[in-house]
Length: 267
Length: 246
View 1 (tube, each protein chain N blue to C red):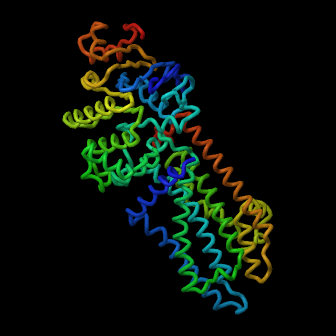
View 2 (view 1 turned 180 degrees about the vertical axis):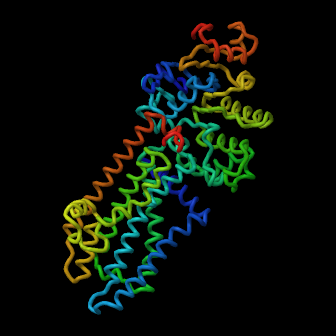
View 3 (view 1 turned 120 degrees about the vertical axis):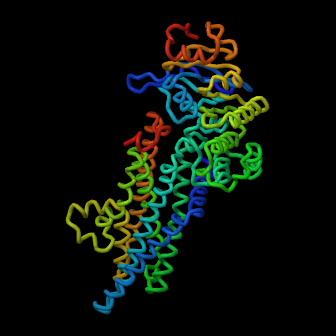
């Protein structure tokens, strides 16, 4: 593996974002809109409900964390799609670059782009709506870590899906966070879900984050053991996703898909 | 030691044989033309050498490095340019060259990029997005990218296909100079037989995945009773069974 080649992949994304307002603005615009929308929703709910319950750390905090996860995933997938849209696969993969370099470069660019989104969300949520991440205590660190790891895993997996099924399959990728969110119990306890959905929730690292978030906000202690389990589960998901991507890449090399990749050749 | 050794190279897609057990070498400072009609297996062969297509059988070595087992080290000594693989149009010329220089492990990236911009006469396009360049200008940029790592093996798939005669002549001169003056060899595919006669030291005629003929492009036609290389090409394309196999 080569750090320089990894950096080259991330540098490509930096150049693209820097040179395009259409790429730069979405890094912070949509999350800002979410903060404004959910900020006022939580403020309204606080106004009409019992003064002993504060919706801001429960609801707005959950939105911040869920948006962060979604941005991490989309950061990986968007970086991959830039090579799909510009038909750059042959140029990229006919070089000394190995798959590990390439995926690491996608992850590195996602770290930067999702950090921008997180910073904007935190700035708005704390200054305008009074959210304090300190209310979660030290647990905020494993919250972010688990969501980051799972976002990376899903981003790598989604990139593999697009590589296998073709450019049109990107439309399967964008709704993934929305499809997962009911199972991840972002806004309600896992116990709210029917039995079969609870089983699925147990397999999703984010569900442990939001269960712990609600426990801490309610004045109970979090569960370090469950957060550790979630982090391990997310790390395993990264390994599985990486294995999947490598498997799809090898299929693409076996069949010549890399050289011929286009909407017409795949789907 | 040849810069490229291909032995028993074969590629099948189900029952279709795209490349049928071909073997050849490219030596240092040699320009070898890979010729053949559409569908003969030229691009399939090049893609296997570049490691983006897995052979069904056979071996490919770049300076004794097996592409199958030492892919990164082998490809670090090679580079390519193809008319169907332009650089991303949404980055500038300098940005694209900088990124690929990093991927190929070029030491002084800024200096090497400046050097190539001057050598290929594209310095005025330094900050221009590749997507808005003309096809000839994009070809120059692709060739500049192909020369970033001073490759020991240069693979060119119809590099002058979209160029006007004057631009094509300039590019041929540049590539000839690179092959003669450097340490590498060139494998070149082209449908322009006049160009092949001018540039290539040796040619391989591919048809239906097999090498039918091999030799000096200036003498090969007469050896097979043809006036020009183009006549020989047409015979290979239409009536390959009338020729002796190489």
